Amino acid sequence: MKIRDLVTEIERLAPPAYQEDYDNAGLIVGCAEREIEACLLCFDVDEKTVDEAAERGAGLIVSHHPAIFGGLKRLTGRTPTERTVEKAIRRNVALYAAHTNLDSVAGGVSARLAEKLGLTNIRTLAPRKGLLFKLTVYTPANHAQAVRKAMFEAGAGTIGNYDECSWNVQGIGTFRAGENTNPFVGTKASMHEEAEIRTDTVVKKHELSSVLQAMVAAHPYEEPVYDVYPIENALSSVGFGAVGELPKPLPTEDFFSMLKKALDAKVIRHNRPHVAMVSRVAVCGGSGANLVGEAMAAGAEVFVTGDCKYHSFVDTEGRLILADAGHFETESFAVEIFREVISKKFPTFAVHTAGNMYNPVEYFL
Image 1: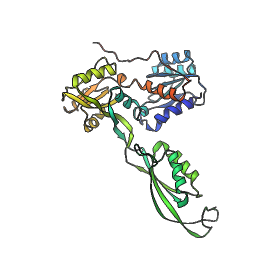
Image 2: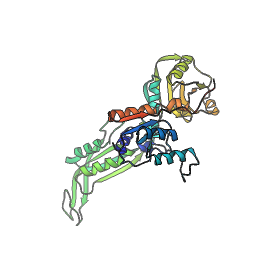
Image 3: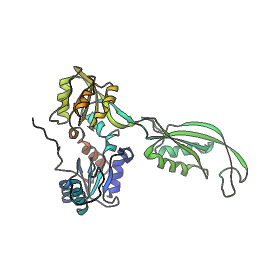
Image 4: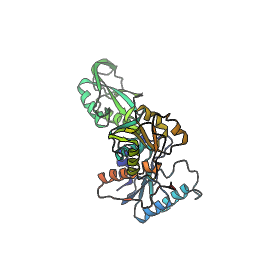
């Protein structure tokens, strides 16, 4: 199998367009056209991981955290990152990561964390803006249905759990074809009026190019007329964190016990509980303390995340239980997601999990 084939399947779930600006998700080392016989899954990449991949015949490492997060100006072996990348190149092991793009999609890290806690009615805690466009296209009335179908098949028209969404109105289009044209309707050098349908639909940012190509290919006009507008509507299926309800309310101490067991956490850091019972829970895998406000606005009694600073607990103002279960503990099952995605599409492909995967943070109890 080519690396590109495997990467394409992961990116169906977690498109690179959804990663944060500071991130470095994607293929980091290696050629997408290279053939591989196996891959190795891990949370973090280091030299030992690269050695394990090479020894197990895995030509690709798929990790959650990117091997290179900041820029690299040299490869001198001075830092762990430089040594890891250098070894990957020498041992012919490609490196790929899906990080904040996997964190922020339905079916991604936070959604899986919510499922681990048994939450129901799960929805995105902080839906993302800036990922949607409105596409308007004008088509001869008899061809409007075919053009709409082509756009829908390319991904346009999805709003929440609804698809093939559009708004259509009939009007009259006018144009005059020039000498160097081959008009579908009308004649050269003559003003022409045509009954047309204006179709408005919504398109996700990462699918805009393919939708436009499909529209142009299906459109009968030599020069299709269309407009693309960025819109501020939030994309409900994309964003950091998740919120949902427990099957039944739990006493706060019982919730902490369940949380600790579900995540195999050594300890739960938290502020003073303001309620005796917990029913609505917000979560964000990894580092999500910046979403305290969103968790409170969602009506959650508890917000589960990791990497919380002292003032994050203070900022709850006694209105939210902030539970820090650890970065690794709330995010390491990204590896489970990778395995499920790859194995479902390529059931006979060899997928290994790194044997040296561990939490770099230890606790003295």
